[in-house]
Length: 146
Image (cartoon, helix red, strand yellow):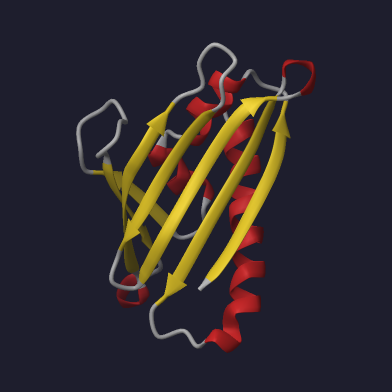
């Protein structure tokens, strides 16, 4: 099991940064070899379900997730979203927090705990570094996409 976090400041108002980070299908556009399918009708809310399918052919796996906390930013208050990972291969959780930052910019904190079934703890350091890299790049790209 590894826990990691990524922090970013974006030249966007918090509500726009929130929108860009929580349009789930867009994650499939920025994470390599991944396709995201939302399986419940919009809008996103507590109970929304989606699946990130990552890999190629028989080496692919599903990462089903459920939104368990949905609090968009409002009236200067931070927004917070929590996802519970419900897969057979990957479990854990992710939290995305968006708050007002300096100069009207958005401050983003992405926290995640990931457990990969059958992966020995000796690989935790490599998994943490890889996850921070992949999700850091994903956050950067999502925040730049209109």
